[in-house]
Length: 415
View (cartoon, rainbow, N blue to C red):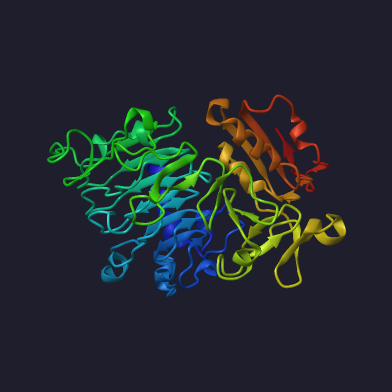
């Protein structure tokens, strides 16, 4: 626990890069995403580093879907208090990665994230999808709209004034039942929920309860969401006869209409693994500076490893060879601790170091296996160390079928 806390502090304080907290996400560029009125963004980072360099975090206040992770850790005792407490993300409802809320002076996160309904946990932080730590004045979590965490554990620790988090029915929120919710060193002497029958986010905000028929996915206790929804739903407009629109879909979601589909139509692009968008949305207002990956019909914010920028807004695969340094350099070292971490290898032809360890089969669903193995399909060379330890998801090493070489130095190793 001590090492975990120190690691968080060191990254927040000493980072020289706006991507340090998203070390496995080479696709989404935080600065490039900071466009006025953007509805889909990459990583959202509010740390001392961003505040000191004058990054306009308010430019992301209109973001509805984060295709990356959210880090709110402003180091309250070093930053301007009025600035950090005025930051709001009133429209954010969906986070694809993890969420870190730490070292703040907030009393509650209810006004900062009033609509947050789902954390996918596609990119975990040391196995966690939600981390709430060292918020000295935090009295309640206030994440009243949160109804689904799809993958990853939760840790809530060292919030000296925090109440009510242990009253919550976390089993209703966690989609993977084998995940853990760790709560420690918060306030011990908390009153029962004063206005709710059992579970509450705050003294006045009860945790939403769904009818058993809704299978944990509802708009209210009596109104179930369509079965293809995750993270709840909402009415398309304010009229009683309007249809219910999913906040997120189990498969793919057409962004403009909210319609859930099995796969994106041929004339649309995939973004973030769950959205379908038009070419215009990708290259203009939607992502601000998006690029089209023609080979797989996908929209990204920058051409990934193994691809080159062509014309104004397209990425094409380069031919990997020693002559072009395996498409202009290796991916940095990768440490794979969970199924979701395999995404960091996507498009990597060459990687500096690859360590895969302590992954159980119970950690993944079938779709996650397929996504993990497909991420290895481009890997041709590992420069230095290659380690596989206590990994129970490989029945054979055929998933590394394109791997040609391990080690280009005298101290290279494979274990």
